[in-house]
Length: 367
Image 1 (cartoon, rainbow, N blue to C red):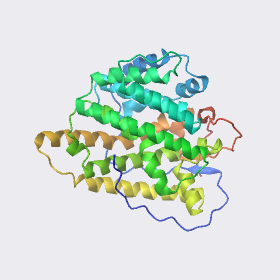
Image 2 (image 1 turned 90 degrees about the vertical axis):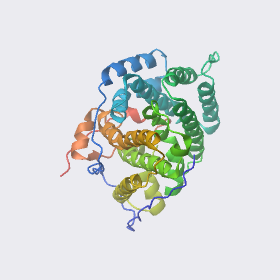
Image 3 (image 1 turned 30 degrees about the vertical axis):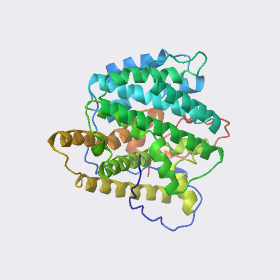
C-alpha cells in the first residue's frame, strides 16, 4: 500500500544533549481527542474464550508464555473495538494475540530466521484449509486457526484487505529484523516509513471492517489512506512513549521514536518527548482536517466509509487507555502512572535476550 503522504514534522528544539534525567514524564496527549474511552460489553466473555484458545496451544515457549500472561489483550480489543459484535470482538481479541506472538517469535531472532517464520505465517494465512506440517513452530497453526474462524465472519472485501495488510505487516517485520541485526538507528523519516507497517495497527483495523464492504476505489483512495496512516502514527507515538522505559532498560530502544529523535538531533530525552507531543498534535490536526476532505461515492458507500472512519478514529483513545490499563508497560501501577504521568527511569540491565515483561516499574508522584 502506498504511504505517499507527508505530515508536517515539527522542528526539534536545538538544545545540546544533556545528562539523561532520572524521571520520564508522559504528557497527556489525548485530552482534546474527540472520541471518548469506551469498553465493549462482551469483553469478559470473549476474553475467556479467546484466552482458552491460546492456552490450548501450550506449551508456548517459556518467554512468550510469561509475556502473554502479563498482557490483557481482551481489554485491548474491548477498548479499540468498543461497538463490535460478540463474533467480531472475538476476531479482534484473537488477532491481538496473533500479532503479539508474531512479535515474540521474531523480535530476538536474526533476519534469516525471521524470514523463515514469516514464510510460515504467510503460508498459513493463504492456505487455511491445509494442515500445518509436523514439527513446525506452533505459530503456523495459531495463524491458520485464527484465519479459519475470522474469514467466516468477514465480507469478501474485508478478507481481501486483511490478507494484503497482514502480508505487508509480516514483510515489514523482516525489514525490522535486518535493522536490528545491523544495530541501526533510523532517522525519523526512515522510522515512520517502516514502523507504519510493523507496528501492526493497520492490520488490526480489520475487525472493524468485518461487516462492511468498502470497494477498493474508496478504501484505497488517497484521502482514506492518509487518514489511516495518520491514526497509525498517532498510536505509534503514544505506544513508544509508554514503552520507552522498559525498552531502554534492556537496550531494546533503538526502534523507539524517542531514541530516534535523540540520536538524529542530539537532544535530551525531555526534548525528544516534547518533539513527540508536538508531532502528535500536528497529526491530530491533520486527521481532523482530513475528515473534511473525504469524497462522496454515493449513499451506500459513504455510509460504510463513515463507519470505518469512526472505527479507526477510536483507535488512539482505546490504545492510549490500554497503555496504562493493560499491564504490559507499567504492571499493576498503570493507573498511578496515568494519574501522575511520572515514571522513574530504570537502570540499564545487561541482558542477552531482552524481555521487557520481566521489569517492574515503581511509580512516584511528580513534585
